[in-house]
Image 1: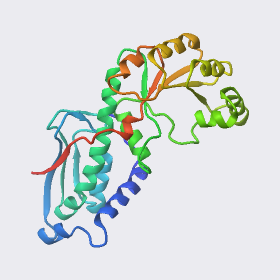
Image 2: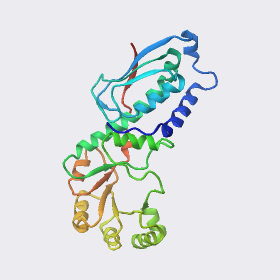
Image 3: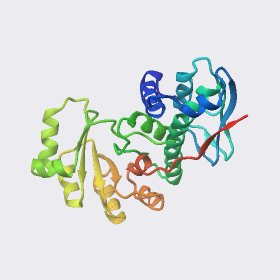
Image 4: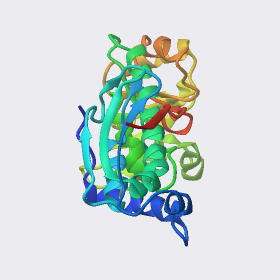
Length: 281
């Protein structure tokens, strides 16, 4: 299992999502159709195989509307799911449970989809020594949740934000007058604990970056042939990260070139939702 995020991080996001859904008048359907005080038992189950993430969001969504709800978690974050697997069993106020249902499922489905896709990438490179990592291509305000889902799928996180590390991209290179000058300026500007990564788009730029010894070099949209050449030139002196257009059909071949890290934006920006439902007992 993967340790969940602290409630203090997750709860404001869940409450904001509930407020968006409840609007000004609350759940009109549940209020109209269900007696006040009625109780309901139900089960969250996965319709398809995958990896679960977002269990904490589901739990907090229900407890926000019924603090006395009883929730039994059967599959925690990071657990693999067979089709039909039960994730949690819930007994709660009926109106509250049905009002929280869609918010809980939205978080569970979205985050489990990310974890499931991530696991597919991780499994695809198994045995190569290459690590899969995410990017900052996340849903605004949901980055902590989505990067947690990536960890649930077995991959690593890249930067959480602009203040985590120096990442010199192509536009920084253009503005600074080259890869070398950009790296030198970064080394002069940041503290000794801040890592520096430089993006290069050719073997010529790679040589320029290697001369300045950054911590990491990102090989952007390199061919397989150039990735192998880059690994040979670096000789293990710097971490090499392959990036750009990585898919499940190409990631194994990229990993086999010998790069250390493969960053995949699709983990968070293109993961399909995992189909999860709430079934009344």
